[in-house]
Length: 273
Length: 262
Image (cartoon, rainbow over all chains, first blue to last red; front, side, top):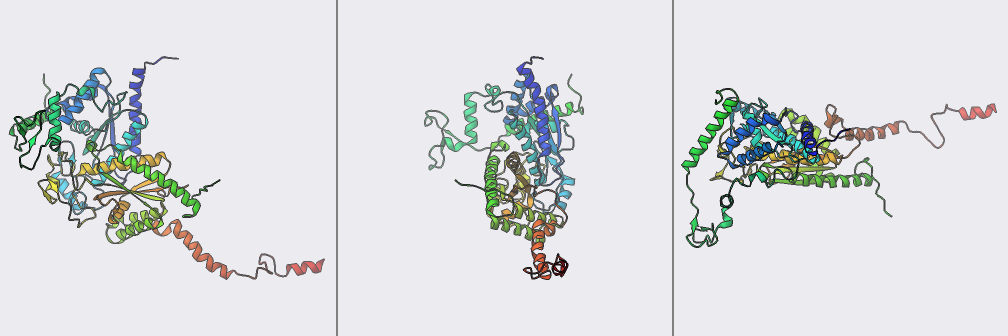
């Protein structure tokens, strides 16, 4: 007989659910029958480098900062969930000559990939579209398994990409991360940890940048006022489209900082004293 | 009092039709699950369409057979022909497409489509006005008109995955197929989408989508049953007899002989 702490027992149980998610992902149906799914579960302190690099990425990218802040807050509270990493080599075509990738045949695709395989902000390409769809099914099965266990989870590009850069699932061209937990309700929606990230005005301006039409006054004059304050007609504001060298510079410097950090974690560059 | 008798055989009888109606309900729930799957950025871009009824399914199977014989690479010929058989054995076909992959990319520079730090790989190959893609020219030189936003195509996986999860939870058999999706799209199912997956859905004692013998397009059960009909009609004519007064299983004259002995 024993009494278990609810907090500790449920936190421990998350690892079992994560394993269940991995089993479900492996059982996901495929179209190509040749996905080659690979998985890894990362927990506790082993997540620190991933969160650290994600935060550095976040200096110039809000969605990455959004996740980094959440993970940091969970780490501080001691409720960091296990993360299921899923990956596959999607640059290995299924040989259907379908054309979806943009090449007329898989042969042409292979010729191109063998010389020009490259990487974007978080994945290698070009990819075989059908392998990418199969990979989506596997990821979806992992998500569904977590949902069936009534465990919070959120499939993440951000954490998967950083893990891939840090050498997890070597050989995969695309990696996704699925934090399975924390225990509780709506940890990944309406995030508490995001409360102090931006002030009211910053949030309002973010919404404006994402959907300026909502705040646009009469456009018939050809130069519409953008309503940014209660008395918007006084000292009116307008939208201007221009190149932003300052941001581009900041973005480039941010990326350089990220890759320096990755090189240090991977042992290519010496770590800071 | 009303009764609904349900049986999985023979196909398209009232009892089997009652089962098909049940599978249709499952298929409808599958499409709902497809719409609520996790998507990139939470942005919806999925459409679904259901094909139901003997003739609808036959059209799809025939288009797959046309593709098998005239369009797809040799290595896909038999899979397409086999899956056409599976379409005829299915109760329902669910199509799931993504209408954004070819028209409204995620524009996130993810790298999946071309391994670039931007989305130039797609935009350099499609017709567009300052990033607004013109999809009005639908003529194709390949089965799928690529390139696509691969991150949006990835979303199709989640939609199909969730649909299949529901099928599995309801214990109906389901199988996602490239062949079915391509044929369905050619027949204007999910017509807003360039990339479409077809899901076969059926409820039978034996999963109709597994344990497939060789040359299945010629050796499947429908062919075997048809062969029985074809051969047994001839055979009965060869083995005919005046059954009112003659039973060939008894030795000839055995009845008269027995009477004499008495």
